[in-house]
Length: 338
Image 1 (cartoon, rainbow, N blue to C red):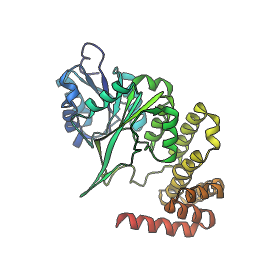
Image 2: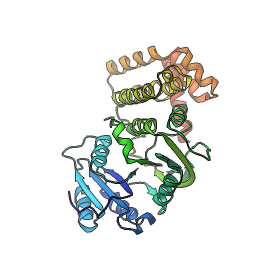
Image 3: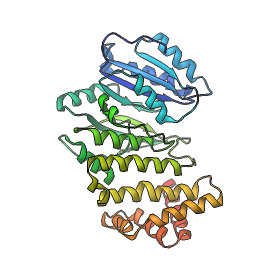
């Protein structure tokens, strides 16, 4: 490790996983050092974990740790994925709260000041703020529940299953002690969702603020837009969320909210991955057959009950005819790109 911890316990540990992020890491660290909460130099620590990069990420991270006492740099021996890099960072962190950021995104200089103030005034274990997606030439608000007061972790978990609360890490502040209750699901994609579900399920109270404090920059090479193989990751995420649900209340598993979650994040996402991902024909056919066998008419009708017409079309065609489902997927992709 380079850089010495400041005396005393930091208020917030900012978790920064980095893989081949040389283009963005320096700027991200400088902007985090400008957080208004960091006027007191001991208020935040920045934990950078290089996930086996092949560019200058390690050099930049090590230099920043040498130059700034609040920056701490660690290096993974090999690329293991963002979930394992975050697990390492959390293990090395000492703050009362955790904030997970991606170094190629943007955020308000007063983000941590607002988030910490909300946590302290409400006693919340999790604080959710407003955020936005940034596309080339376009900004789109991130959908968030319009709540004025704190709710229980169980209630927030229900909102997550219903899609009213997103599974992103970066627009949430978490009490550090919650991480003792979770496993860092080693999924290559959608690991955020697995972590958020577990952390919220472990929380007593979740608070919301409307301030737009985080901007997620969607780039052409983003993992959420790439053609990576997701089958194994989707299975791991499903297992993590199912375990969290059972821990809260075994009745959740038979609820419509849980069914709607499985429809969206497991079955339809899995089918899209199988049909578009880099699988050979035998692998693809096996994955598609397994997912279609789990797609019941009850789950299809859940989309209709929620007036989710896009997913109703996708689920219905997947149930009836996979060729028709392919055409609907292509149409949805073309419409989204228009």
